[in-house]
Length: 141
Image (tube, rainbow, N blue to C red):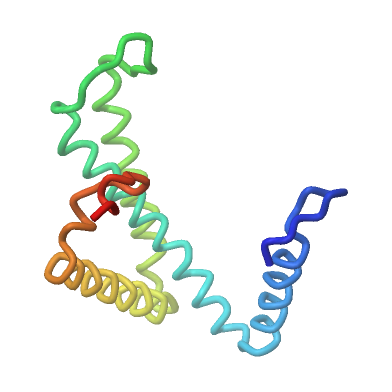
């Protein structure tokens, strides 16, 4: 799967595998089930984006400013609040139809599983959570 075509510079086998899985899922799943998966896959990114905005609004006063970096200046807070409002409206539109109940349950289940995994990591392997990904010093024991 990691082989890359020298002519197109793309991972052809991996691309064909994803295409094949997609075709099989479209054939195997009835239209409503596929729609549920698509709806769930739009709710999750909106939740992640909203959580990122909330986290930013929580810690923004403690973040260091770098000279020459992009800065919204006085518009920083209004832009962040508008982004959060937009995300909340998008989530409302996605989860309020009665047809979205299954997708909401799927997302809730995924969030519950993720939360349980996080609690397991927090309980049994806390060292992993105390370093950033790519920090090689955390893996030298």
